[in-house]
Length: 206
Image 1 (cartoon, rainbow, N blue to C red):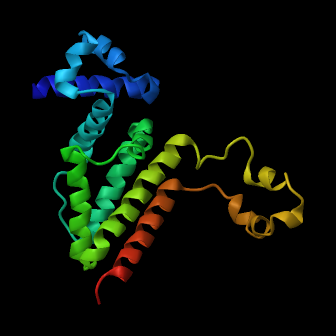
Image 2 (spheres, rainbow, N blue to C red; image 1 turned 90 degrees about the vertical axis):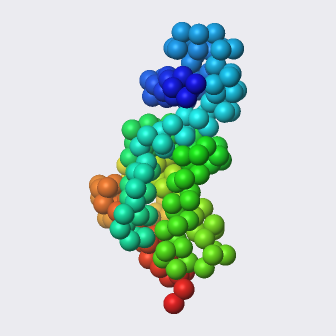
């Protein structure tokens, strides 16, 4: 039954990769697998459970099982793996914003972040809050890349500033030469992770 469930989830993931998450339904997955929709329920339950299973499948396959090194190394590895998942499967980060971590693989990722924060010396009372901060950054960065939020859009920064009189966007005009520069998103992600690690260290016990 485990192999059958894995094949069903893989089919759903393939559909999402090819046509987007909205194309994933019990019917479309059943057609891909070659069964009736009712035949899916013993393996994956309903649509909500199918979506949870897709998250768990990808996390189980692609998140690192072993996290050697310091707590900094571990959080950096998890952040990079999470971003990589979002880049390979653009729908994945957006799905994470709508689904709780209930699949075993998803819970293990949360537990790995908990452990890294504990190893950093973060007080136990603050671990869950900081895990949510770390996870939201990782998922949010991935979702922003996948959705095009980080892209230039229809207007470049200079064009956007030109939509309003100069005095109405004082900070934009002051930062103009920086906003006009091309962004190295890999370098920015690395810098953001470094800043996040500093925040964690600042909250750790002396």
